[in-house]
Length: 315
Image (cartoon, rainbow, N blue to C red; front, side, top):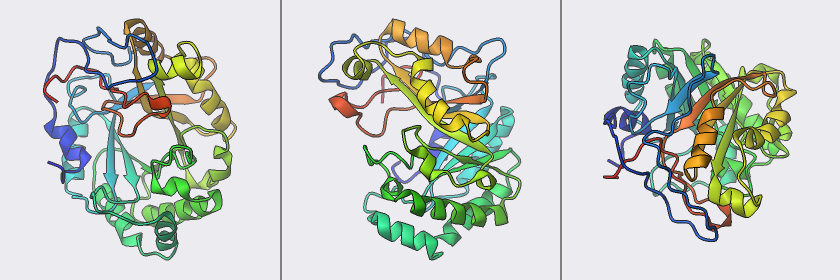
């Protein structure tokens, strides 16, 4: 199934799972008991929550009436855009909007394009047809759509994304170019600029006219907390530095990717806090859970966290 795009995998993966402890990735250098005893560790929905949503390739949110955002990831090369129609139907049946993260590369294992070549190609218009095809397809959908392009661009430390190696000026030019192309075909969409939340993100800001909402990535992993901070960190503590860096732009703020993993107390604390309103985060309008394993290894040799809300013993 390696050639299937993530949207269709999410639809095919709607299998009910119950019981058992969570499978955990290996960790070195920390002595935390990471075994969560929850059968389901998704954020607890408060009586007046910020809007909940999820990236859900395993289908754990299929029958969750509280989830109002369906998050999809797709590359702009080697992608079957008919999967967007299936995702749209799935979202409509559940009363959800679509958050579509578009990554400017291919998921093919033999894809090799340098950061400079990718940036120069975008600015020269060689990828205009890729973005136009995605946005034209999205324009046919019935669900409300938000487009999130080339996320976490300021994270050069980990360097997981080709576009994270661009300098801020190059990123801003590319972002504006791509959003201009998409708006020609999809004027009704909202557009999300989505840094990871690190220091220096301000240099990558494309300007008020090029976004409607700001996305952030917030993850809590207990073994990393122990090594990096010497104690467990709360949802608010992990969110505040990133939130404060973008609050001055005056846009609504969404946690576009949320995940947490640790022992039972750690998970319970994050689950209780993540979806409720916080006085210190008045512009935070939605929290979207990343319901999958971590794709890239974390710093400090703590391995690949498993953010999934339910146990999947056959994976």
